[in-house]
Length: 339
Image 1 (cartoon, rainbow, N blue to C red):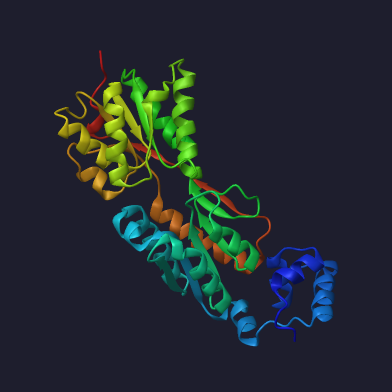
Image 2 (image 1 turned 180 degrees about the horizontal axis):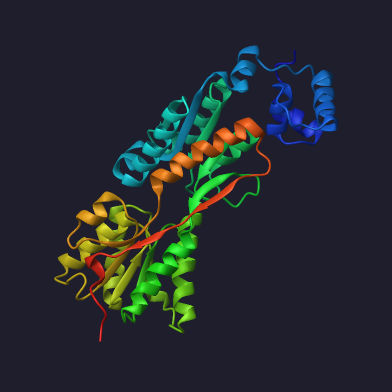
């Protein structure tokens, strides 16, 4: 055995994906005879052999799924979005008799090394990973490794399976509702624009304004990073522009924006209306309660596990693309129709 030969090298020799090599060497079905023979020829020529224990695990015998959240542990604990994803994933693992291994990072700089180490151990049947930056390295590490995985959140790659909510439609619904109430100067606090969900929510904001011939003012857009403090900073930038309403791309940022508005001696919604996105528990508990777009976060985590198990049973092709619907939840932060 040549210990220096990697699964990626075999995939390049056989002109197939790493996941296909993994399926062949682990005796999975649904691989064509031609592809199987090309892979086995490359294996024979190089002397590549998978570890016997790893082969046993790859056949689904570990009963362990990993959940990777590419954020610092402090960020994960501070954001209720992630706790709801974890609850959904954990619930599905219990139903389907899998053990859940949660992967967190002390700092985000630890991510590449930690993920590489986890994948090298070959102890996971598959992985759920939450989407952050569009070019997140962990996604490409997973693609290269051949370990089956599903994203919670969308990705640009046509090789990736994912579960997400309809971000653009949700934002469009939120801004359309504000317009229907008579608000004119509608600002937005977006998420980071290297995040696909944030980009799609911003597109929904723009779509609603364009369809009703409202001018899009550059000064009415501020960028946050889905944290409360970034919502505060963004709202401080928007206040001098005198918006009469703000669509905020997450409830957590909306909480920060609301604090800035009230600290300035203004009223929500009498002076500035707010609509958030997520409908996590703090939205209903704020003062006033927050109108928001409900996305089914727990359901997304649960569905991601079911999708991953389908991939383990039937292969990763074609990639699964599941988009869950959103819903407008009307509370008091928008007021009533304006004259």
